[in-house]
Each structure stands twice: as C-alpha cells, then as structure tokens.
Figure (cartoon, rainbow, N blue to C red):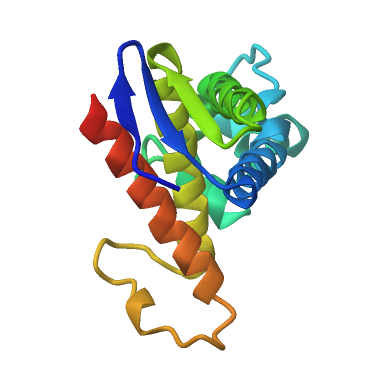
Length: 182
C-alpha cells in the first residue's frame, strides 16, 4: 500500500488486493464485535441505578470483552452507578456510529477492486474512526495498555503475535498518512 495523497476532493492510494481484503476483513470483524451493542436497550427506568434488575442492565453493561471496555470506556470510573446510567443511554448510539463508519470504509474498499482506492473527503472521518477503533482492539489483543509499553518491536518471527503487531503498526501508518493529507 502506498501512502495516501490528496487529489482535489479525495484521498487516493494504491493497494494490493490482499491489503484491501485485510482491511475489509478487519472492518467486518469490528462490526461483528460492536454490532450487538448497537441494539442495547435504553428503556426508561424509575428509581436509582441500584434498582435496576440484572436483566435490565445486562445488555448495556456487558463489556466483559476487554476490547469493548476499551472502545466504550466508563464515563465515570469512580461511580459505577453513574457510569452504568451513562452507558445505558449512550452506548447504543455510539455503537451505531462506529458500525456505520466501518460500513463506509467497507463500501469504499469494495469500489477499489482495481487496486486504486479513492476515499472522498466526506468519508475520511469514517476511515479514521474505523482504523483507530480497529487499532484499539488490536492493542487490547496484544496487551498494549500505554503508549511505549508495547515491546512489540522485540517480537520474534515465530511469536504468534507478530502478524497482529505488524497489522497494528500498519493501521497506525494508515491513519498517519491520511491525517498528513488533511
């Protein structure tokens, strides 16, 4: 994949078919991860957050996957009730926006079967959101919690995390080259 460059009202690049396939697959997997949260209920409730039954809370507080917890962090880490309340009314919309951004990226990639990719300027934000979200998920899977604590540069070729680390770095490069064009 070549670095993005700006051409009038779009960002363009050339990518190999396997690179396009990897990006489409990552965006599709991201949708599969986040899509269930898009339908979380925001039902009205009366009383305090502590009065919610477990059934009422399960679909909005289910962030057992550390990647989902990273994508949808607690708004009030020191106040679980307030954080649950915030999640209850915002997570569904946040998830829907993330899914829509990923779908935009997939559609742009589907239109690039010749190896030439054009990303209209009004789609760039969707790309940046999606690639950054994918990178956050990869960071969790790699155990990266702070910038600089990765140790990924020391992975050996036989380490099963090596390919994931390369994709993680590639995603950072994609975001960087897109931002430089703006």
